[in-house]
Image 1 (cartoon, protein in one colour):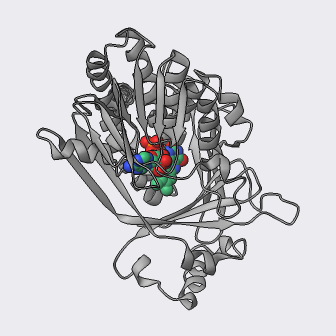
Image 2 (cartoon, rainbow, N blue to C red):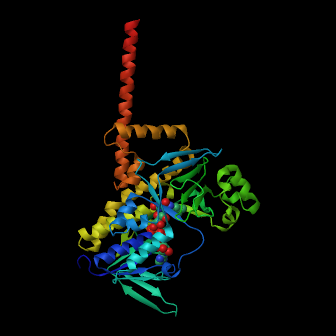
Length: 442
Ligand code: FAD
């Protein structure tokens, strides 16, 4: 079978699955998309919590491949740097990069809707909602869906692409067989989403073009701007212990805690107590597994490499999976066994690197961003950017380039070694000159 021919099932119409359906639809495959949630197109504009995420260069490149980047950017709020909130309410702004570099805060629901609408435009793509497969035979390439009347139907595919998130059902099928290594690591921190509402005129109550951070050492709160004037705040806090989510369980305890630790935010959060009590506390997981493919099925996105959200890259990486898989499908002319082999070979070490970077960035954001050593490091990076040709800070390579993650880290380590040696050589040289001058004088 050659490129664009045959039937493909995509399980999960989240961010990766719906973008992959667009790519496959454009290539000409007959695509069935199975999503367990209801059709967001039939739900209309939903009131309630806005949940957002930061999309950067990798995500935009993937969306741009099918002409969707500008559409998404049209509903995004640019964040040009971090706005730090000290315990005393002092603000300091740290740009992410040069003046024209920004990450983009977009509504997760709107982004998903845009992608599902784009996929559904292809006559060869059919989306089934409220439709989690009840069975999947990954060797035969079959998927069984139960219907409301108690019956079921089974369809056969040339390839099954599992984009069904961190708790993937298709991965579970693979685990039942011999040979899948799987590792799932939870942080001792969880998170809860809260809201800063817009002003009565629908404006933002804080500087809108920044990702706001309240670093408190050991825990932190962040806030990303929404298009509607609100901010979505996320409190990252230990799940258990004296100072933790488990320690605040009554309405009366909520406001005093926030007033003590996030004083300048509390007055902007009129629904704080109600939000805290009603919004779920969720866990943060890193998932690694190998191989990503078995029989006719392959994993993508969080299903094979969920990462903690502190580099703002999980969705960007899931979109980048689509780009790599799309390239492999073209290059291997639709030979799915070859496609899968090539895709995982190209991708796995990079997403492993991202998982480590994301955990490292948590420690940086909660403990170091406000420290003087971090600020000096950022100033040195800025200086080197002007002085050393080709020098690019690691954060910029991850966020503002499409250099594969592991290559970016390797380049950053090389740069650091060169800079370290240069500083050492200059120091030794200056010490030598100083000693020689001193000897001459005495
Ligand atoms: P998902 O988006 O989880 O989609 C999976 C889909 O599969 C869902 O629609 C689900 O309903 C469906 N599904 C599940 N099981 C089945 C089944 N059995 N059958 C059918 N369908 C099924 N990333 C960023 O790039 N930037 C950020 O700023 C960012 N912020 C984040 C903040 C938080 C608090 C968290 C937790 C994550 C954040 N991420 C961010 C990561 C990002 O959300 C994920 O990496 C991204 O959603 C992964 O996309 P996905 O399509 O693989 O999985």
